[in-house]
Length: 193
Image (cartoon, rainbow, N blue to C red; front, side, top):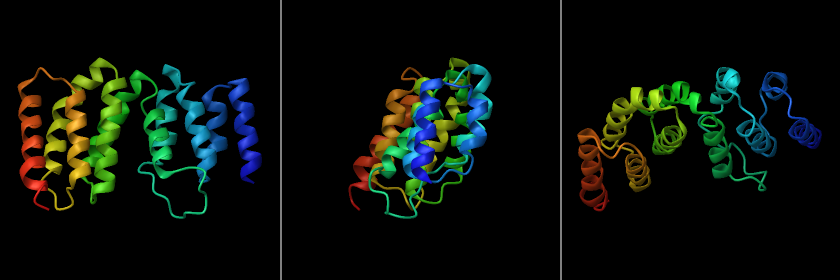
């Protein structure tokens, strides 16, 4: 019952147990109301020793898609934002999330997944440990620019890529070239469609 699970989540928020105690209880959760609460709980309580197990548990929810419109109290975007937050809740999470999102972006088959990958990359870069950010920077930029040439590229994706580039390292020549490509694509490639 969703109400019972929501009550348990409330208890866990007050007591703040170690994430390892709660992770098995949330496995397979699908109710959007519960997921939103769980994402919030873990965003606020991740320690460095919990990073790997929390990432493993939550990355399986990516990308979030609604199968039903029955629960109107939680939007799909709220769930996506909650998942982005929990997967970037600790700076060391970037060592796991950046390669994960890069892989997902490289294999994206539609704009929805690609946009979500780029938005998630942006948050991971903003919150990530400096060593992870530097290690995956070139690959993330190259993948972001490459996705512009895919058939499903649309205005929202180009704008998400622009936002990602605007919030990443602004001093590198690779960054400036990529930003110019995105701006050119938005002005000429997408404005005609």
